[in-house]
Amino acid sequence: MKSIFVFLLILSSAIAEDKFLSNTLGSHMVLPRAPNKASLWGWTATQGVTVTAVLNGNHTFTTQSQAEGYWKIDLDAQQAGGPHTITLTNTENANKVELEDILFGDVFFCSGQSNMQMTVSAAFNATEEIAHAGDYPNIRVFTAAMHISDHPIDQLIGVSEVWSRASNDSIGVQDIWKWFSATCWYFGKNIHTSTNVPIGLVTSSWGGTIVQAWSSPNAMSQCNATAFGDKLFAENSMKSHNEMFMFYDDPNKPNLLWNAMVVPFLNWKFTGVAWYQGESNQDQPAYYSCAFPAMIRDWAERFQNPNLPFYFVQVATWRGDLNKIPALRIAQTSALKLKNVAMATAFDLNDAASPAGDIHPRSKPEVGRRLSLPALAQIYNQKVRLGPVLDKVIKVNTNTVAISFQAGSGVISLKNPVCTVEPQYCGQVAELQTADDVWHAATYKLVGQKFVMTLDGAADVKAARYAFADYPLAVIYNDVDLPLPPFVVSL
Image 1 (cartoon, rainbow, N blue to C red):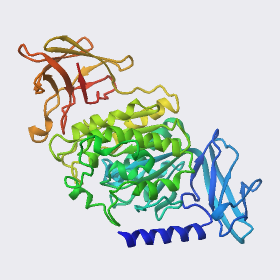
Image 2 (image 1 turned 180 degrees about the vertical axis):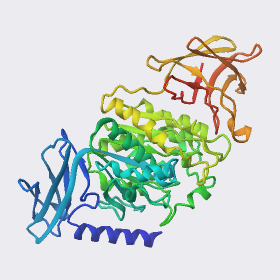
Image 3 (image 1 turned 90 degrees about the vertical axis):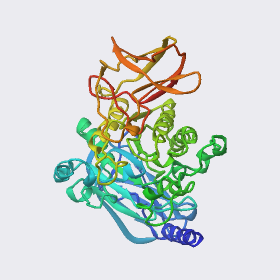
Image 4 (image 1 turned 30 degrees about the vertical axis):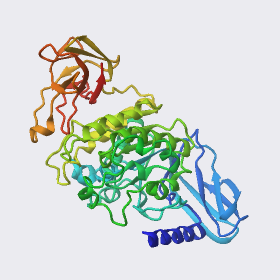
């Protein structure tokens, strides 16, 4: 491991000396639109070199390189659209960098583990989707390569896919773990078709990875792992899953992916973040309930946007270690207390027959669509319907609980799902906990617009939970066919 880190240190230093322009930038990219000022940055061999950027041949911007040759230029704020050209020169040498086919629009950062990494080619309806990808030339995509570093680095160590127009080639690679992310694609495509704004999609993901790897030291300092009683690393239960993705080295150590696959993007003014991760932290739900919000807050601070929108997917179904994923789903909801954070459900989109394993459902078109809905509502002020939201859980009597829903949840109805896997993975729809801490299956019904749970007998209940299983039987939906997320509440 030490020799690898030494190699990465040497490599990153060489990049800083030789790379005039950040490798997160390039022709065909989407740069942030007004009111943001898009940035260009890179390095010269020495300090004090004049760097010039010319937009469309007639708007000139200059700066001088600072310590270690670092330079950064902020362009004037530009309205959405294009294409534009940018020419970069410096007084150090006669070389030019010509950036072509540049659009201004909104750029989203898509990150997480394998369900974010899983490509369009592995999702449902892949053949048709790939064939028509070229119908969206104002969607541009970029994929960071999977690398680690034991210290923060300014440049990506590798790029799997440089900035590219949407096409059957740029989103249709048949290697299902290479490019382009299906969840990110469908998320961005739905935003683009709903707004007609040029969309840039950046993916930086690695399958089988824990939240600690994506977190900075500052984020991790906010959560003392030993205080939660969880297993620190979910190495045993995830071993076979991780082995599919460790092409370079084990990324599952604190900060390694933050250093190598997030820090190089910190100059970007992203419109928002899309996140799909959590399965690898299934052994530590209590820790995750602290670490995940801490990471989100830290990312917003480091991206210099305290209001950075962050949209995540609540993990889907998986026949892993029995009854571990349900607690992780609940832990994920701890992030919803943060401003500009929203969650898309996926627990009802099970896919036991997925060729990539049931941990990787192929229902990414619907996952991406659901993930885009809060973005359309919050960022673009569109009147889109979201899923039902729990309001109050009221103890009607010793053995009966009534659940109401927030205004705007829509008309609630009940479905009658069927368990498609072994019964122990489906669990119970509704459960009530008695004073002896035992959970019991409860009967349930819809009374008006309240979901009523009842435990037979005279026992006094103290807590209620819904859809708490690996393969939950999703029952509660609203009138736009979105499910109520699983919940656990004390009474």
